[in-house]
Image (tube, rainbow, N blue to C red; front, side, top):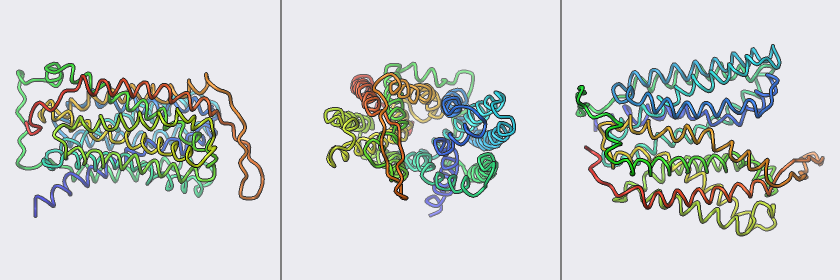
Length: 441
């Protein structure tokens, strides 16, 4: 009973506390326009704050993975401090921008604190609980990592209404006040996770000497496998971000303007459910790579059906087409989430547990690159292809609201993503072999 209790109090609960905090980075769309308006810059200029956060998440995970490997308490402390300072620093520079409209210092400050400082907290915080979870849940590694990563995905659904409520009630300057409040709340949550997090007492970390095999040396023993995992992970994130970044506008094209917020929450639930569901399902397979084959086939079929029916450009011409587009959004969100939760266990199957935090960190560099390419790719396609049209939406008071949408541009994004999904599926089948070793090694 004690060990059963410990696996939750020393692994699952602290992992959720940490991941539910850092996962709020995906709430950026809730307040990005408010930040832009408050500091006097375009939304496009402020968007780089989020892109930098994801980039430094991946790069800090890649370069600090060895610290996580050696000492999860040091890495989880770094995560809590950096994430809280990043939030508070972002709040300060939003305040500064509000009193000095259009001052470039405020924008650079947001890039530094939301992008770099918070990014370091994100990368170390994301990695810190993963190996510990797999050690506690040896027989259900997928379930364990799925729980934590689901917390990261569910953070948006949980925090978004809270953030919106804060913005609505804090009055003038509510946008920077919100960041100060959240910095305190998330610091407390992450520090509690830091104090609770612990590896099993029966696990002895291998003693490292000058002759110990490094993570890079382990990867070089099976370079083709790593290239395949990295590539399919990168493509899944890039395609996910490309479609998810246009999600709200796609929903509006379907004529569902009035329930955009509700459907966005539903897609966030699919994102979190995919993280837990696909990773738990993978525990039942002899080869976890089968899950990625399922994710890519599902994504290709859903995307292909919307392309064939011209689902977005038809703008909800029929209920059937509308359902197909919604299925695509749900499938992409679920597959996007499932891709994250299965990476550490797939790596453990091929490379063992000894350097798993460092190897996982290096793999997360794919997230860093995708963080810069996914959103930006979709934005470029939408600007280059198609033309904007006026969508008339009748408000609750009977007045008309004109919304600018580019259905052909959003549809064009799908031609690129389906090609990328096909490449990922080929890499999954040809480059990533079957499980080679016991994951307990």
